[in-house]
Image (cartoon, rainbow, N blue to C red):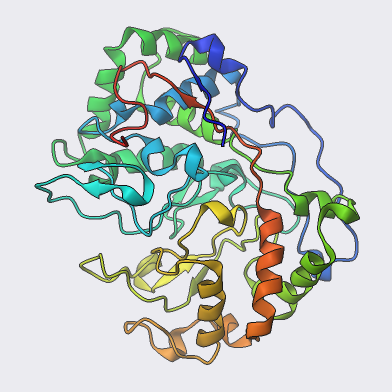
Length: 391
């Protein structure tokens, strides 16, 4: 893992932003795949018309991403639960936000504590720029579904939600109605941020919640892994994946995984009722999308960074995930709040055997990629601890 640090000077950051948005090229599709459900991730990353990607804006967004100035107690940053050393995810079942200390699975609440756990597993930010992409490679950044229940559309709108959430970044010191005004006030009071916002948005007095969200979203759109070994294979390199991994891909489709995990991001971005067991750390059941106990199909890319799995992190590894699907194919949910006839109809079509699991997991590893921005700024304009209270 590259742990090189660098200063937060603007020009030191500008040239470290990945160049994924400079090319118009889209990799060719490998012919002959079942139902043409799989094509490589596009090389070009789209952005909304009112928020074009620029290196200046991405550099500002990166500083904001690591700066706990955005949280009510000034102890949590976006990077607290989405750190590059964890693949912009977190090796925890569910997160500890405000009033916590420590990093990843070692993070604990401070004492005394009256803050609840974040109720869902932290998605990786890698490739969220492509959220909503169809099997044909089409997607709209303004309509991109976010979170496990797709309650928010676009990275711009998503970027502010953790700041508003009590258990994630807001805490009890500020109300949901006042926290953004407080964060904007802090940023306006910081001379360095005044300069950086002016450079990024081209005019003075440009610090506001809208531009805050645009800067964060722009940085997040630079965090893509669109050249995995599987992408290389789909683009025509037969040697990019092994024979056993190819066999695993065929099994992945044959047993029924492809019914939901399709397209370049291996997600249909639809809601499905799977009846996953509740996380015992939570006081109340998580009823998911519109109280139906359904959750959005997650991407299968970069699974090495996103364990434990499912919406509440209840399954520790990929073997457990596949065993779960084998079990529920019989129509018996693991969640007492979900009846058998409420399980998604696609579940009953899964025909997964124990002997299939190792080859499928071998294939899933071809979707991992480590070539993404792992650099951590060594200081942020606020002067607070980089990444929040993680040490």
